[in-house]
Length: 450
Image 1 (cartoon, rainbow, N blue to C red):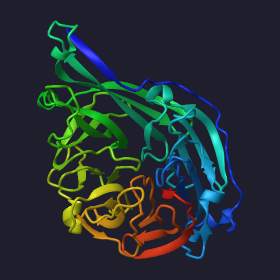
Image 2: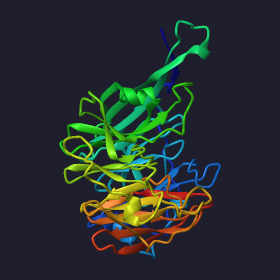
Image 3: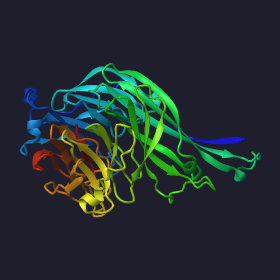
Image 4: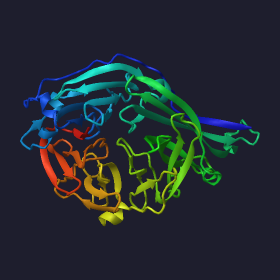
């Protein structure tokens, strides 16, 4: 007889009307006509909750033209004059490819799981458009979601619940005799029509590792960052593994770190999941709050985290398998140790900006210090961007968004509780432009540009 001890999220559906909150206008007046030859750049700011850098006090956004974003004499103060994004904690934001629309799914709280979108009109002016829909009945009130790169048509959110399975050897009254068998990991995936605010598809599937891996106590405990392949017929989902001691069923944090894994399933049906494993990278591929994998030139490039040999950028080819001939170690490319990719974004030319920490990172008020590097996916090279100032309190763990505009990458730089700037990296030349000033407040930080 098998007994199950369940550790999962109870899903609840809540659909509420969200009130829109705004503050006073900024001193720099925004003219919508300014973006005719450029695009909007929306800066996201995370207010402190209880502790500096936790971002739990809510998210505010403020938009400016790409021209003003490059102007160091221009100044914005999102914490004073920004639009408050509906979300109990740090909002999970996405933007349209042209920068004219912001998509949001509220994270946690009474409005958790509510999808809404806004037209960007400059400054604190974000006009709600379309209807809302709750995805909480499908993936819970704190969903992990991403916008697929399909012309702003589709979003996808995911969850996984893991249930330990035991064999009681016929003695149900004596739990101490129970024998651990494996974890049953159940994945839920929903796709969302971003245009019409409706559910496209929802499927639940069982995720299975190899018999050997499961016997050793490994299971998939977190998933995130769905990515559509070039052909548009497969969805890749990043995964994190956890492990228990099979002898006791208790958590085991000292086990071997296995090869990085990705879940592959049919799209748009969301059926037939399989798990592929890298022979190059180890550790997790689910990322945290920023998109962790991108399609480029027919393949999908993916960062990993927690690799004992430092983060790698991995490659999944058109055959939906890892290309183990592609070896891109950030440690080796930068000449550093213990690199950990926090967020990244490639431009249209295959060159990317990477936010990372490493063994040289100081311990700041909110966590380890972050840096930026310019990498080349084809040449497999990386160089630390030295034209951006770094301080111990420059915290990038919660970083969410870069703007890729042609060969340019826009990013935000500001230590926790201190002012900073927008910077624009020309990925072709490596030239860095110091842009608009970002006015900060105590304990808060900026989490990217959209």
